[in-house]
Image (cartoon, rainbow, N blue to C red; front, top):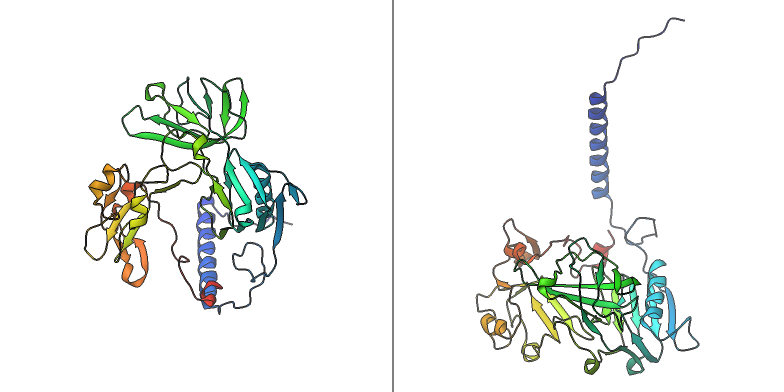
Length: 352
């Protein structure tokens, strides 16, 4: 049989053909998805974010005795939290007792941390502080301590140093994960400069609870004791026992004040540190922090690198808080995200 001369499909033609098929298929899928009715009775499907309203999820208890996980440290609470999160979320119930904390409890999404009221106490262990004796740079993931006494693997630590190029103070929060002598490995790279010229220091300062980039987290009926009498803050920037940090936020309002009277009267940076925020009073009235102007607020140590400016939302009166091109929010390091599912929504809308 004589061989047939089949047409040759060149690589570029193949890529163009496949690209066109993929684009057409995607457009058809997108069109069909828009035409589908709202799902008011969803099923659990792998990869789908919409699920039924499950009435029961996993609950794990933590306590001194007669609990699923027995112990009285941050490690046992963290172990329970991680276990529940791995199985899709649920509750960790902290039974009565005093729990000694050497690091934060890091809460992931879809976890409820439930205490027993004033009988469930998370108390921070006394802090230790020392200096660094070797320069640290952005990509370094270890530090060398002048005196390692009191520092342990697993500790939450705070590092503070003046920036060698005059860009303010560098502050990072890390966990010690390995050690040999006075050298400790960190859970992540430094991401900032900690040169000896900036007098870098390290201390076991941390928040008792930490939530970062999470959703659907509940914390109830816990007593938090920052043990201030036995904790020296390396820099009072809001990362201590019960301290907060309010940074890189857009505060947009028409009534009231940027910070209320109660908060402005308790302005110590060991309570809450404000910085790199954008404030705007849409009514046209001055932005006030209690009874203080921005200049007076800064004189108290707050919001020194914050700005007062119109954030340039697309249409805030219609609930469209996307940022327009050229928004000054970029100056504070604000990172926009998808706002389509933010805020109250009818139940049927959330079940698309």
